[in-house]
Image (cartoon, rainbow, N blue to C red; front, side, top):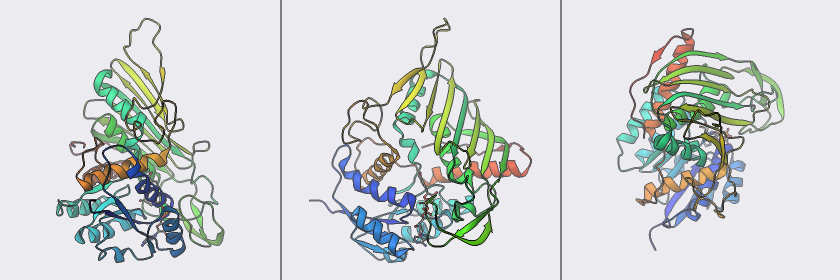
Length: 397
Ligand SMILES: NC(=O)c1ccc[n+]([C@@H]2O[C@H](COP(=O)([O-])OP(=O)(O)OC[C@H]3O[C@@H](n4cnc5c(N)ncnc54)[C@H](O)[C@@H]3O)[C@@H](O)[C@H]2O)c1
């Protein structure tokens, strides 16, 4: 039996639990088999939260100090799933300690810190690093990307949105998400996914313009105890100002001449988690909405004879990720965001184990820097009343 790969997760809040579950399901997915996985530790600043996650997901121990992982030789792979401002310090220390690092998106709280993380990764080419752009692994999104390259021709227009309502209520407590300058709010939290998907599906952006932000819930109450994710909590009387954007919009050009329109909100009633896009190309069009993740619509072989229209495609084992990616890989058997974390964990562990199971590698730290480069350009556009801001050329992974 080969040596186990030891896994640890730092942060057991909303997304941290998805990482724990993802590592748990990874060995059950796809072929060939992974080496044995050892579930070593879950670390969270809140001891009870760490212990609860460790118990639920079958990790050997819980801890409150991530530094204890640095000297633990049984830990090979670590997910960083805490507030964005903590990613850099933890990633640098883990890489120096010889650990493979999967960091959540956005890669850091600032472009400068993200660049430092990419430099640290480059200084350790023997270690695998990745940024958690998990929606690249939506089966419909991957299928649309393939179809676009195979037959839909040049894209003219990408119209994307990520609308959520998690911050709509002023009763949602203050949290790390609401701190930082304009552009670190909805734009960085969920717009980071939309921006990554736009480049993943269509290709590199060349410049952004017309950026505008607004903040409607301007202060929030501190929670009485620990709060994580977007959960409601008992509130104290103490309020603090919300520092960043509830809504962000901008336009962009792609290097191929297509234009993009981007609309991002965390206060959109009726849209709990609606990541969606329409895409118009030379010989067809396609659209997808995460409200109905297991289907997408497509027009192929445009004829202009009065009978063109969207076909509804149900995603199944003929499309990426589903054959071997869900326990019952039968057409019409659906999947959810939790499954994507399993695909991502599996891909990362394949990279660490040196196995080629055919999954695309996890987005790199360089991709995380690229994402923040675009976010930084959008921020500068908003600061200059919507001015055009050029982006450096990019070769997407
Ligand atoms: N890929 C996705 O779909 C997705 C979804 C949600 C969040 N995220 C990302 O995941 C990260 C975490 O977000 P979240 O929503 O899970 O946050 P969260 O607030 O729900 O959880 C963060 C956890 O970190 C713990 N923590 C705080 N300081 C710590 C420290 N020094 N050491 C260890 N633990 C500490 C907190 O106690 C809390 O339990 C962010 O970077 C966020 O952008 C990604």
